[in-house]
Image 1: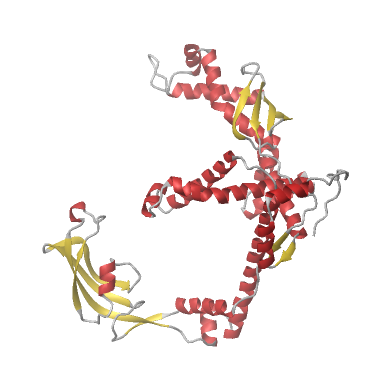
Image 2: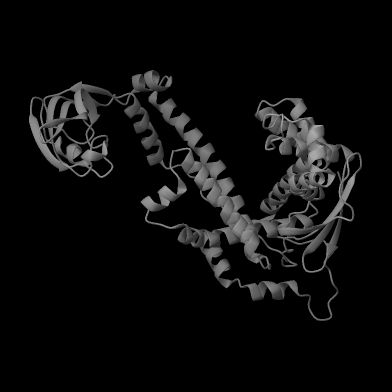
Length: 467
């Protein structure tokens, strides 16, 4: 596929595309196969008619239209990726001649693109870097977590409290008839953990081994079978054992048995070192985000509504996918939370607008600092990522040979390199300074910063100066 880009006024571009004859032949073949699947012809089972018969019956024009309809969007998407164009909204696509088998096919598309952000000529980046001090309380908490993992439970003659393990027999009945799924013998539960219904969880608190207690309650509306939903039930609970958690002593033996260290001091030092490294990584990540936010705050750009809506749609899809992995539909989640999709979208829009603004600002910064990624750098990056995913060299070569995939990765890497540059150039400031800096900033002030002084030469191509 060959592409050529022409920039038009008002943030529009025109892409001229030439699709290889091989791809055109594939599109025609694919169209015939799809048409054959749903067609019934006398003497043939559904979907079993020969391709030649389908072509003769439907006519060349119908096959061509199907090939074009089913593939034009894919060709356009590939062309945009290969040309490095991020289109906004639907393109206006035209072609001088329809596609024909055995020949290349040319078409053009005109589409809106993201606007160019304007940055101050004398850009000064500054951001807060979070502290990496490791609180001893965090280490203590981690050691307690390890202690809890090594805890044992001992049977004691005590009343049930939160966190105790309790061995119980449980019987539930409605009108004297046993509820099939509410009968249990030697059921081990943790008091207060929420495994039992709330009324039963609360009832076992204070009970002792050998004690029996009856609890009257209304079954929930979700109770199955449905004929029991909302009915009055009597549950009989018999406590057979009460087991309390016994924590191991904090000594060198504990460190050796639970973590493989000779002494408790060595364990603490290892946890502290690991926590410090984690804190440094988190602080660096937050500093990068703060720098990007400062960059976005200094940019002058009108963020198109379409880009904000697209970002919101992406967030909703990610949210639905995450909930789906837990067996929950987005609609069900919103209902449980007492929310509706419209209010959720409104809530997401400010953050989506900020993210898009920052990306546009970073793209402008990349252009200013002339951030570029050579083919060698790109291959090295792709190879590194492939190795991390245990992928073969064939995968690397496939990405490098595919113009759309290759340029998508190049653009992402270019922006990452630009952010690296911005982070290196940024000055570290306190939280109070950052708040004052943000409060003092306004779009009008940034716009005025961009405007050259009266009578001053235009130094847009001069090297930038940053603190």
